[in-house]
Length: 294
Image (cartoon, rainbow, N blue to C red):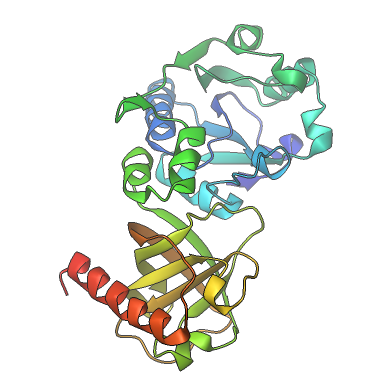
């Protein structure tokens, strides 16, 4: 069950896992697995208390890894029985650590699970030691993979550099973005590479460049290639995600499509002419097809 208000959560004792859980990466999944196992042993439900990501309010421009619906789906898959998603706005950010502790008391937390770097309250004043005033705390150490800690901020940094394969190792699945297909300028069609243009949530993090991708659509799943960028050859504009699907014809206007970024093919760059761009797109297609073994 999904809730957005503390007062709406069913009464009764619970094991409560608390955190932003942006991306629900392997570190988060490990924490939730431990919490789920102890909740089972105690015969209590597992509640995940999380936030509509703080990076929507406080961001250095990196954006967020998972929108709310993506996060909630991943939390269900990780074993959550109840999920409380509190909108993280500026008013919430100003709440004191004492107010946050009152929330946990109202949720009737009997056991708390947090990551070792978890902080809460205005100015990040609260930590695991404060949570002990509410219930016993299990502080889970950060996982280490590929020579460093598994953290959402590290995954964001990898994606900003287009290192989607490394990000995949830390997430435990390919990084993905989903949005509704909207009408574009149909320039791709004129070049012989028709694309789906996706409208995405503001601040959703996109890795810049050209990628081999897998797209999940209402008509099935397709391999393809995608461009994340400003289309410098066609006159720079806002950041876009445009996807060309292999073996697909027709349109998907108004439909939701989920795109998984599997391998970076190259950086986006400006070409001297449309013919030069078209030739490069043909090379990109051949490289993507080789990657997929097609």
